[in-house]
Amino acid sequence: MAKVSVSTQVPAGVEKVWQLAVDLPREGEWNSMHEGFSGDVPTVLGEGTTYRQRVKLMGMPAEITWRVTTAQAPGLLEQKGDGPMGVTAINRWLIEPSESGSNVTLEMEFAGGALAGPMAMMVEKQARSATEASLAKFSALLA
Image (cartoon, rainbow, N blue to C red):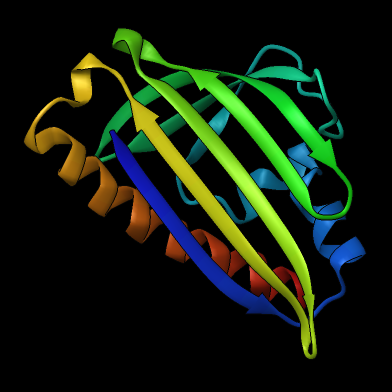
């Protein structure tokens, strides 16, 4: 299993951060792994929302079918996804107030037989870099 947790401070309140995090059509503005969507794109994420996203990690394209399992505004958003070759994923947003705005943590987990052995470490390293770049873009949109 590969796990990534990246945190950053953003210069906006939790409500504004939440609004951007659940605004699915804007994901391409900040998510460096995002390649596009397949099918209908919900305008806002909420519990039970499902959608298909095309992503690229380590130069490899994949399609993930996401399902929002938890949407507790404005602090917790969790999605579970099913990808190719039996890979499953979890994306979790944690948004907490801070003195200068909000502390945002994005956690990702990937599991499945295709990630056995050293592949998990490679995915973890690439996902960490992509998540750091994504959160930097996300923060800039809130400035």
